[in-house]
Length: 199
Picture 1 (cartoon, rainbow, N blue to C red):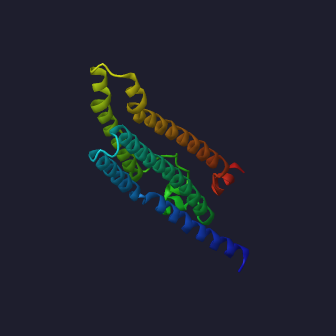
Picture 2: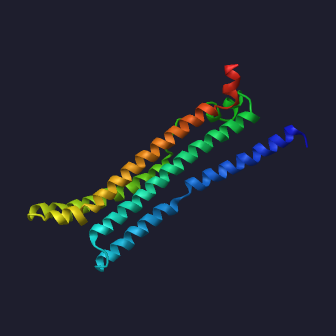
């Protein structure tokens, strides 16, 4: 087997593996089901007076945050692998193939979330909004109306708000890190056609 044939075979195997990785990342529907099942389980513990509602809301917000973090991570890996796939296609195709096959291999796309992942993201955000509104209406506002006790507000009732802040900060840091890595990837690995255009 010549070096050229070996390289072609290697790139084809790598191409297949990258598509497998993309498929694994976007078929994580079980994450949504897990968060919903977890939310219902925690609510059942509240109904049985096993877990206080403040703890329950905190756990549900944390689970929804976990879903959002996973969706953000899957989006990054999807976009990164799609760029690598395009770079491999450039190794085996010509520029004219952009009009004959598809134009996506021409330029790398900006990092954006595909609609499948946006739907999961919307579910996570929706769960957080619903349960934080529940916390606000059922727990926090009545405390203000009844001449609240500071120790209750500061200890148990504030826990869901603290968890929400942690979820938001972690999401921001994760997104910033992914944006930095994606930008670095695009600069260092533009693909063979970009190298040819420079020369």
